[in-house]
Image (cartoon, rainbow, N blue to C red; front, side, top):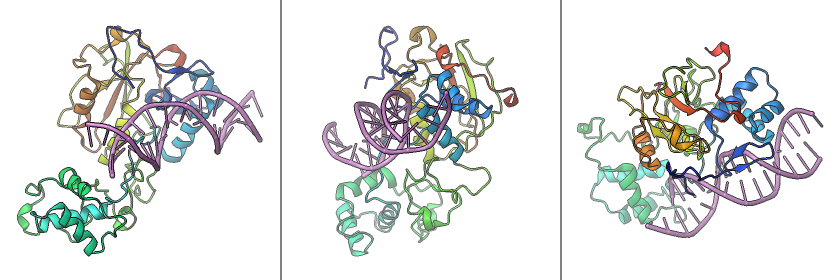
Length: 331
DNA sequence: AACGTAACGGTTGAT
DNA sequence: TCATCAACCGTTACG
C-alpha cells in the first residue's frame, strides 16, 4: 500500500465509506482518538447504538472496542502481524546464549547440534542454522558488552537461563511466563497474574485524563491529548507502533524529539488523510518520510517507565464528532 | 430497535 | 531479500 503522502498532491484518497457514511480503511484499526471517543461516550452514558451513529462507526466495531475496553482497560488495537516464535522460544534463545557465553567461538551448526544433544530441542523443533545465526546476530549480539557487570566471570549466567532476550517481566515467577510469547504478552492477552501489581503494565492508557492541553499546541488545527503515566514496557512497543501507524495518519510527524528524560510531549502529530494535507501539516514537521520519522521515534524506546505520552491529533472532520472534548470530570 | 458475533476481504510483520 | 501465514482489523449481515 502506498501510505506515503504527497503534500503537493492532495488528490490522493484511499479508504472506504461504510453504510453510515463514515470513512474506514479496510484491514486497519480505527485511529486512536476515535477509539477513545467511543469509550468516553460510553463512560458518560451514551448508548452504543448512538455512539455508532454519531461517530459513523459500525455498531459491530463499537461493540468490539467497548467489550475489549471493559475486559482489559485498553482501547488500543491488538498486535497486528508478526508471528509467534515457532522454534526459537525464549528457553531456546536462552540456551543458545549460554552456549555462546561459555564458548564464544562456537559455530551456529555446533550450537544446533548441542541443542539436540542436550535435549533442548528435538529434530522437529530445532532451529535451523540460519535461525541460530540470526538469533546470535539480532537477539544476543556481541557478548563482550554486557552492561551488567561482565567482570564477574560468571557472565551473568544466572543458571536459570531465563534471562534472555525477550523483555523481562517485572514480577516473574518464571513458571508460566517462560512459555509466553510476544502475542501472549500483548495488553489484550496478558493474564492477570502478570499484572498483579496495582499499576498494571497492561494499561497503555489509563482510564482517566490528567490534563487536556489544547492551548499548548502550535496549530489551531490540532488538539493534543495527554496519555498520563503510560507504563511503557518494551513488550508493548509493537502495540504503540501498530496503533500509531494507522493509515489514517499522514505519517507520524515528529514535532519534537524525545528527550532523554522521558518527556515526549508533542512527540508527533496525526494528520488525517482526507484533511487538507498541505494546509494542516504541523509546521515543525521536517521530514515527510513516514518510515524514517517513525523509526527514529520508536527506536528511542524505552522511555522511562511512567513518562507521559502525548499524541497530537488533528482537527477531525465533524462527521466523527471530533475534536474530542473530555467530560468535565476529566479536566 | 439493540447488539453480539461469524464471515469476509483486507493488512501486517516475525519467522 | 522474499514468501509465508497467523495474528489482527472494521464492515456487513444474520439472529
